Image 1 (tube, rainbow, N blue to C red):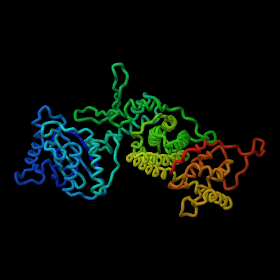
Image 2: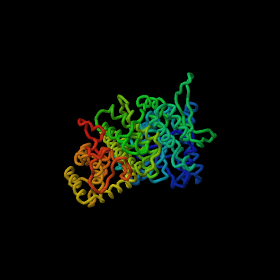
Image 3: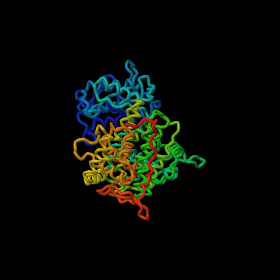
Length: 589
């Protein structure tokens, strides 16, 4: 059950809308289900005193505004309190008596009309649809004082959670006051009227998040915003220093023709200029280091940066599994920036799901846990490198490294969900799980081509060689936890082990290292997880068809390398990323 509270100054205008047909003829059988005394005139169903509903509507308006008129100048300018209360999709249909009980509990909990208080504000509850009601109250009490409405939204939310439990409705997650402000009904209606898929507030919030992802300075942040087509207006102190900023969409104007400006702090609690400055200072992005193994391949800049980000994202997953809030909290902010960077540079095939994952995870980046030290330099550097490298093509090595990175980001999102759940952050945990689902969908799209190529290479191996790798896999994974239901379930693993051996590595030792990195019980597809771990550890191309300067996979055994004179030498040792801290708890996936 979701309450949505707003303020206004026109009682009659709001009632005309509630009793009208709606903007899409969606209002049906509008009528009262409750009122302050149970005898308020009902324009929807009262036909005895006057058959004209407009006359009854005027009588209802006058009755609601009576105390406002009596208070005169002491009445608040925004004297209309409006709260819509909606059941969740799939909930049972409440009857009018139940909705009346809901309305009475909401006005009591918020202080509009406490039970047993004869001087409570006047209110009504209008129903014009099966799944919600509208509570309208005028904010002058019978003793002509204003009601105390501190934290009315939080109180309404808490009462809705109790109503859900008592009425057997779907129980939604409780908030903690750290969420970004939702668009108002007026903003939603304006978006529908102008043909926009979302409100200006939501579009601008995403634009600001993307502009700050990996930005190196305040100037770069504002430059990115302007390059994204956003109007920017700075607020300056008398000294000339910037105090804050406002943003607007081109063409978004109010009824007077002026641009509709949104302060950064109203887009999100962490998007004010002081908060962004703090992030830029504490997590100043460093120049991106070359990707591991970049000297052995002709990988594109997007592919190299995605490989770097994969290593850094795995470290974040490890930190999120620890109980040290001061380390974990800033990691969530950095991961959010990394997701924004990946989403805005991803190919069309995965862009929609990655953008949805970034939006969902945005809620997981904020909680009441404060970081003792906000060191997000590695993550911000990874985000900066991805943005500066530009968009990936979605094919070849670019597509393979996108799949590799997204597979790791699924792990990070699940680690974030467990971290939030352990601290009772219900909304943030759910947001992390939603992000993980979108990332899984993006992964399936990105990994389809490179994984199919690997499976084809695995099937092309000679039978004896293939049998040897199957034996290795069974020895390291005695429970055979790879994908069930197909006789070729280990094709991609076998092909990857063959390439690693050709590069001079011990297949069994490498597979053991990949398995030991963290548990596999919660992996959606163990085969894929191990394939990407192996290819990263062995510095193999993420797309098996990519040409490299090193030896390539063929259908025979690897030949020992030779020096310039043709003399066989020992294979060169391949540098590997640092092993995870053995004393840290491995992240679950």
